[in-house]
Image (cartoon, rainbow, N blue to C red; front, side):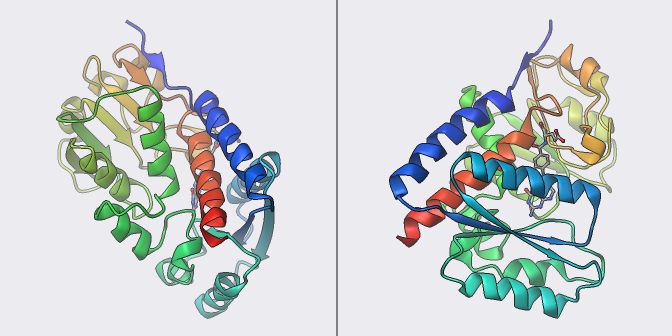
Length: 274
Ligand SMILES: Nc1nc(=O)c2c([nH]1)NC[C@@H]1CN(c3ccc(C(=O)N[C@@H](CCC(=O)O)C(=O)O)cc3)C=[N+]21
């Protein structure tokens, strides 16, 4: 039995077609400001990809690049300027930021109505209380991908490996909101293989290539791999695909969905501002 592929490239392309129409209807170009601190090559690549995808759907991206030695105060001030700038619709601060910066403080400088990447505590709380708001981009992309394949979630045991504030933790809450029974695993979890083996739906969100072995996966499970370290997933793909019913490839799975959600939410921010 080989798993069916959850094709994030195809699903994201459909979403971006709809976004392109939305943008055309709006009659002006939404503006997404991307903020990159330091010169990590992988982060630079992701920001460049996001900017490229903006152009494709008729949006403008404004790339702000700050030196690696930037202080929290300087970054917060720059993000506040963008929050106050009426020509900016959405703001993305690329994670991670250099260690001297208080990333949470920097995220909180994003005006909630421009938080199209869903990283502020306002967005988190709205998500947790089912009040709409902007989803954290990667968890939002995961849910959109599950829904595109009409994968049932209610009553299923979802196991989320990873508890970071913009990925694992919100992913679990979104699954909970859809009536999944959710288990979080993390660095202090004992017997990770046993927890993974209980998953009907597995979300891997750690950033450690091949941490999750294929033979841990329950037969018929749905495997969502949100790992992207070195462009490699957290799940040992080939072996997992032999047991899973559905699986996301890396690349071509969660990554493109993340960008699609970011741009869809930027279009929505622009529409709501009008
Ligand atoms: N504030 C913030 N929000 C983010 O959403 C965010 C972030 N920081 N920091 C970094 C991670 C990573 N991330 C990816 C997005 C797209 C791909 C993606 O599309 N990857 C392609 C392959 C990339 C390639 O071809 O080089 C794919 O999976 O098919 C990957 C990773 C967003 N992130």
